[in-house]
Length: 476
Image (cartoon, rainbow, N blue to C red; front, top):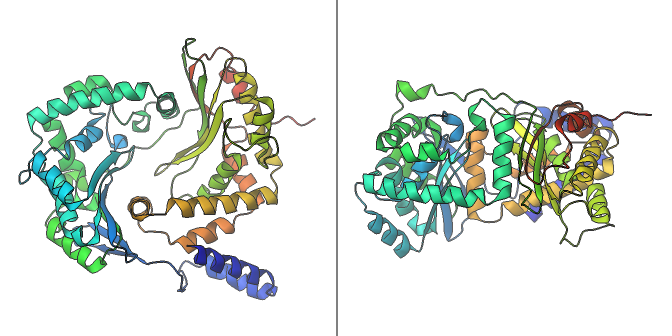
């Protein structure tokens, strides 16, 4: 990865010393609809689509270990208020036994391989993956196919997992950050499936039955909505052969081939859960951003990086380059803050989560909004350059290991229909300047209605009218 960064940096430096005609040629080449063929020091991501629409994508790095998983277009966004929680419930049932493997058999087989099985559900995706030695890849794919296609969904196991999920919900309710982000989605996307929680309400969990789970599988767990992704020591041709063996006979039916995402509808609004017994107030404040494929995604990512993350236990303080960090450290207005840029298919939430107390939450909110407005008007090229370097570093570090690479492949295949090569992504980021970031901030932040969610002693938090009024700057 470091060699690729040096290659990119060298190319940029050389471009600065070329005559204008040469630089124009470079720009035209990057803007071409047909990407140029180049040699880079990164493994190729190979993609194959089976006749039934099932996609196989892998990156072979020649390691002795690998991660392989199934990424499925299925999550709480594809649910209604009546069946909300089904996708997550089904994820819990995946490892409870199949028609050919009991739960004990499954656990013993995985343990004897020295492998690891895991799964998770998000608002738009459900993922099942396995980490194993490369030599055990066929068995890992066999197990993944079995739990997806042949789970018994026994009544006893359903009742047992029902209790597990209800206890999980109780634990999450003790995590204020999780609660605040659920509130944020509920108010920002009220009346649409994106406003639903991933786990669903407890009333639904108590009522979900085997027929509900089978119906969800039949509708969503189909070839055209699935990607088999793998990274590490993986031979792509062998992986395609395994995909044909275990998934090639599956078909799409008329009832599920036309599934579409329900349109999102963002609403600038406010939701507050006042609890004066809590020592701190937890706040999430956001504006509507953009989806995965929107061209403004990267400028907003850079702006998000400029806002950054800080905790009062951090060594970064009054002399740190980040203006918001300096102010928070100097004035002691919050315990921590964390900027975020959450992306979905057709929308997103760009904002900040912060923790303060009743004495400081008002000033903390004002300072954060002041910084947002500064990025709309006074952002410098130096700040953008520093943020781009930090963003590239963080992205490279996040791809350290077979599991994060496999996750990156699976997610991008569902979101973009392809895996964006690292050099291409790096070039996209490096090409952004301060003008483009300011333009994006003015488009999505300046004079826009935010969504605000909070829990705790919220008495001193500015009311929504004041927060909305601070979304522009009055020049003297």
